[in-house]
Image (cartoon, rainbow, N blue to C red):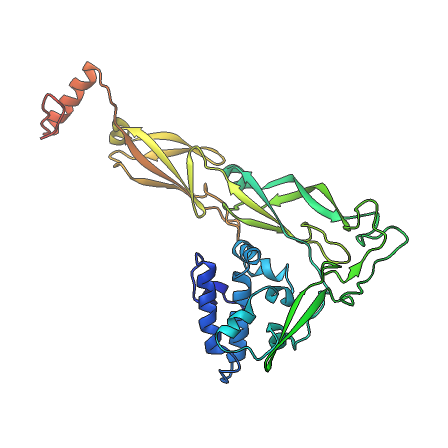
Length: 369
């Protein structure tokens, strides 16, 4: 089932400020909080709005969501990660629901789970191509600076022959709890372990190559194929080609964002392209055949006599190929009348004679009346 947009869930526009997002969530949380609303579906609705707030109230999570949608969140964060860091306790106290530990108690049974699966950061690469390359497709190679798993320690961060140990401060969970009691309420604050930085492991003898990080920075050459018909701002996702992480976690993804450069002659409209053609009065009056540029060379276009300025001609199959079925759009040629700014004496006499025979009166300044 398709998931709803976070902005739609909270009823705020994409331009909403943090304060506006918070106010919208506070109002909805008061309405659907399970301690107040016992109707069927209220708890599911409460979790939905809470997830939307957790993402949109965090600058980094919101940036990932705005750029990649739900894929940018699901592929990078666990459910625990999504909710971690949001100021739920403050909001719940404001609306009078402070009698539970925190958001983890409601959704995860009060037990903070260790992040067994850690995923590397996604990367973005901006690639500029021409309209012709977008039409025929492109195979090329890009260079991406990224963190890669250290080959010396196999990503553990520990010196060869040694292994990381369970962190004695958090017991391997990567998190520590601070409990605070206020009257009849008990609040539990969960934070990342300072000693192991959330990994749950400590390294006594770090790897001499990666200095214990488990990853090293390298520039990787990656072959990519841009499909024919790709449009401006299209995203190409390369799974596992993002940043690596320490340990057994998987690498993030690489998103190649395609930018199609403006063309000298053509403008794109879906799978069609538009070409503006300037021709003279005599050509449109008498009719002619002219050559026009296309994405695959030149084509001959017949201009019937009496063609009016602004007329659009269609050259079928000379547009962009569709990404879905490969069928090509058309080239639309708009005829614009090119009016000379200077006339020779003979040209003027001929035009005055033409105007006279056409029952058009012209004064000495060239105005019709």
